[in-house]
Length: 83
Image 1 (tube, rainbow, N blue to C red):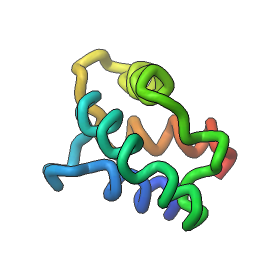
Image 2: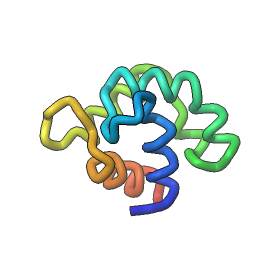
Image 3: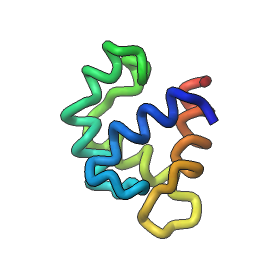
């Protein structure tokens, strides 16, 4: 798993509980996405709207429990962003 995936996961984990919910991903990417892209944590093309954030969540939630672990999240973003 990449260091960038960990940095991004921690930035999106608004309640710091070690998992991500759909609401956290959408809210955090809306608020922090442009800054994270400017810092090189996420590609600029990876910052989308609420529908894009929701789709990213759905794709990462492979077990369907509506919560993302770091492992689920990192597997997707490492592949999607080419890290």
